[in-house]
Amino acid sequence: EAGVAQSPRYKIIEKRQSVAFWCNPISGHATLYWYQQILGQGPKLLIQFQNNGVVDDSQLPKDRFSAERLKGVDSTLKIQPAKLEDSAVYLCASSLDPTATYEQYFGPGTRLTVT
Amino acid sequence: AQSVTQPDIHITVSEGASLELRCNYSYGATPYLFWYVQSPGQGLQLLLKYFSGDTLVQGIKGFEAEFKRSQSSFNLRKPSVHWSDAAEYFCAVGDNTNAGKSTFGDGTTLTVKP
Image (tube, rainbow over all chains, first blue to last red):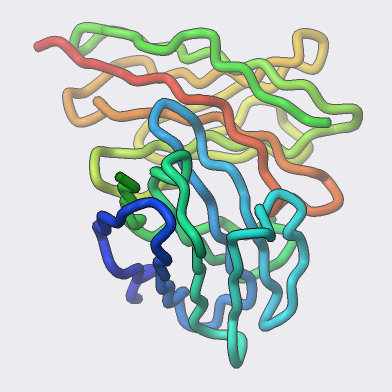
């Protein structure tokens, strides 16, 4: 079984530029999560999708961050414009069940550096 | 709001020694609790989880954790550490209306001495 795929693995941009990250969850997983992990901290949930609908986006900075999950499969997370404090690893995870009584499977992450 | 505290930022143990990583949580109801491991350059992997029932939970790679409601703790243990256990460990508490909405601690980095 293929794992959660993310691309790119690394990205360096200047502040005020825009950037997009892509995630392909495990086949059949209805729930998809985007996390932000700042160096030295644990992951923070940004947004949770159930199929192509948003379950929770209470911690997503909506003035600059957006995410979509077209057709309930792949997802894209965008930052526009980026700030220095957005430097972090962005993790995507998926699970079979929205209550996550099933395990969340994490991708390797995208490391973003904003200069 | 739920929160998690991992008091130890960094722990060093010798290979073969026992390990205990501490986790304290704050949550108003019966929590869902998780331990994850993250190796360098890798995503997080679930070690074990507690939802209800037996308070001693067995996980993968020989790890176990004990839920103690009176102490609001969910400490991770392993009787004999291997060099390959060197990694960062995260404790998380899930909202029991949506366990997918987990709050993570800031992690404990484990170094294993030969």
